[in-house]
Image (cartoon, rainbow, N blue to C red):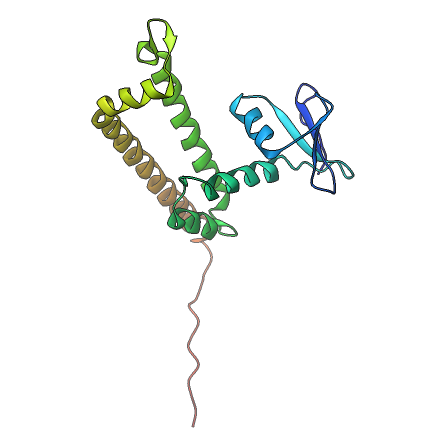
Length: 187
């Protein structure tokens, strides 16, 4: 599994001593600096300095782990347990795609919302404090919108499951599967 995605991506090398080296700034950086790159929507790739193996996902997971350990976690233990249960499951690929599409849909909704006049005040972007006040007023509306979104998302997932079951039945229905006969005890 080799290296760099695009030449325009920022390249960060991870050395065996766990230090991260930003080749663009020619300096060592921390996970906090990498988190800031993410927040700034800057494209980057993290590679192992020796093998050139892509470590970007691993570094991003480390950042998530630190964020979950500090402050208010985003994921409950139940959600994390459910995600773990999908690893190695036949639906693992579909679940990853499902989560990715839902996060993207949520992001699109957020961008649409912030792109409207509600996203600015006198031509200035909302500060975090202004967003808090705005959301307190708009809370019930936002909750209703998110409940509809979750219901639609759940419905789509159930439809995907049913479709997979039907496809499996159609695919394997032609095979004459005979249920195993339980062994009889002879005494």
